[in-house]
Length: 376
Ligand SMILES: [Zn+2]
Ligand SMILES: [Zn+2]
Image (cartoon, rainbow, N blue to C red; front, side):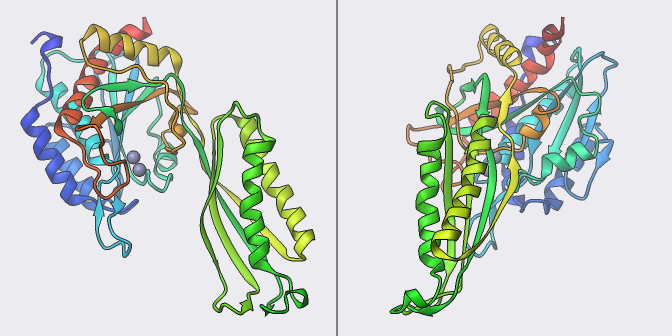
């Protein structure tokens, strides 16, 4: 069969999507999902060399000089506040299905790619830990470049979009504890007011991004959790604050970190409270390799795969960044916007239409069979 006639199996795509949707499991608890993937691979004659409690990877070795990795993340998100139900609200069943369809198409076809294919089914992307885990387990050994596809709600259904260079933000966690001295709400001067100190911290933190960093470079600080106190007339001893900051450039990261620390010192002094500030690493920015991004765009055009020019940054984070810190790679969007106002990623209504899945699989097939030209 000529290479350009190798297509994803659309019936199989529906079955995989349905089955994986039902299995949806939390980060690092993707037991059934992993079993399903490995069973499917065995069925099509593939034995992963590395199978973990959750996640697996392996190689289709065609004796080629170069090895190209495709990564699919496999975890789901809680669909209710009690976390008793999980669903693929980030479309990771799409990511898995596209990769499984690629592997199935390669197995079924007589023509084989001129590169080796490393397949990586990664757990725990949503808690940005799975990529590090898989890298520690050796999934990048011998890999020359890496790709991942993700559904996107703002891009028209079935069209792919490749952003060259910075693509997704660096994302880090902020935890701040304010310890003051409890007092009667009517006598604040007899205590040290942790509530007002925390409120001031939240507000002034916005000045770091609006006044201290270069305004032409993106950066963001958001607080999503604040807790303290139990009565309307008692100023409590303790207030806890949690948030996140995002950036694309290391100089912005440095400004934000320095700003958060300086702010803690000045607020401590003003209110007489003690502040413990913890900044925890989350993900680094996803930086798409420009030459690989250009190659994919040219390949898509040559193969008549629909795509849209795309230059939009998102301040969402992705632990795909861990891979592209070590090898060249591209994180590719596939449009899921079916009717013009598609529900956003992570929302309860988010879904991935089937044309999005087949478009991603088609892109992977064309890339697997065409990427050798990139290395020439
Ligand atoms: Zn997500
Ligand atoms: Zn995701």
